[in-house]
Image (cartoon, rainbow, N blue to C red):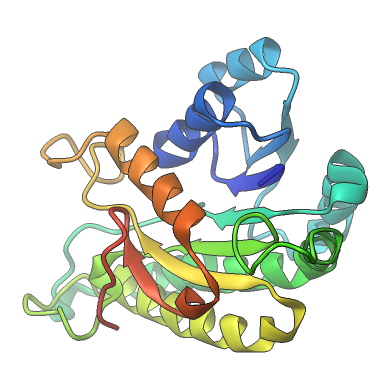
Length: 244
């Protein structure tokens, strides 16, 4: 995977992915997008000439055309090998009696609608990468979309209830992932959903059992192993398949 784009890259898992790619991977071009860059991300960009930061609010639909043009200029003829739709929001445990409309709409907009619309906008660049590497099998050497989901989006494994805004947004993202995998199959673009594990980040909280580095390393190892038969599936960071 020569070219990679990660959304929500200024902190947490997104920042962890950027660190991994700049230090341990042969990626030629890394594009980090976020609404507002962090000091740590800015320092990484100063240290690595293959990292470029592009400002992006994933819910600003009117900016997608311009941002896609910037991304196209950054990746050039190589196209985009890997898109990781990582930007997301969450709410704390929410009982049915306490759910607010604003929470539902906010989670659905950021976690579901935004990845769909950004992917739609970037399909030409993903297709470009797939065509440029048409001798490679379907996978990360060609073109891949990874939608960062959560085990809380699994309907089968929901045995606790609650978390309405987050659960619904991630279950919907899983449904979108399946549809993308079908719609983009003819372009040889692989699409999968990924659960990073319960990770110690601002979103996951300090009590989470998994550190960022372990999650990120596992996810990239899994991504690099994905093949045509894996498109449209839901995976945990360690490569195990999860139920919808």
